Length: 350
Ligand SMILES: [Zn+2]
Image (cartoon, rainbow, N blue to C red; front, side):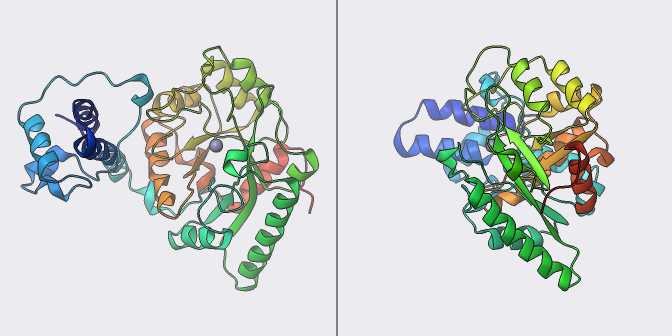
């Protein structure tokens, strides 16, 4: 069978032989193929037109039909495009394990206009709520990430007060929905965090992620071990820091890194953004084998539409054999708070 992943790769290669609008049409279809809800081969078998798929017009449709009729050798994708699930694969995976989507859960990474998101705090929370999320962690960036409009300690405190107000409103209305005060703090190359300890102590949940020197070809194991050792860090976010089509991310002795996360009881993120999928299935499997106890799924949404990415993280967990009771998203807001607080050695400050 020629999968959507194969078709995406063939479209990408075909785009290299074209110019201008034809090239753009093929590149657009290649990117869109990651989101097609069914395998194109199934659409054809069902007698439906391929033009029902996003970014497929008559010209692209005839190319796809040619490949499906007479499958060509599919070139091995560039390393930056390997190990990503397509949405068709996500659907097949979760349709076979329906309780993952049937059970309401949280979303533990998203961004607002407090850093580089496109919606205000209130709008993003409303969007997540309307999708049935049980609680959310608001994880805007820390100060050093200036390209992402990172927050100063003062802005973080301001956001925290706004979240407290919203939570109080929910409590008064007897609404169980909660918002965790959180952050995606930058982690420097020496493992230290880009936010003062007193500010971090006010948060319910601290995600830490690397955003610098991501093209290093060295073994970065020491960087990971140093980061995991930070008592304020609860979740190592998008651990490999890879990006589809752009970079493979960092290199490390993953068994050692994950064994350390397991020993310390820290969570690893399954960043569900389509272009990240970080950890991917292969690394998530190794993490499970090394005994990592907790995983955290975050859509890493910067818009309302991207909140839908969460299913990519669920499918990654299923394919890696991670049981649902090891996913923080399926616990209550209060138990995630208590877990994080215990890791940091006590209650958060007000
Ligand atoms: Zn990030």
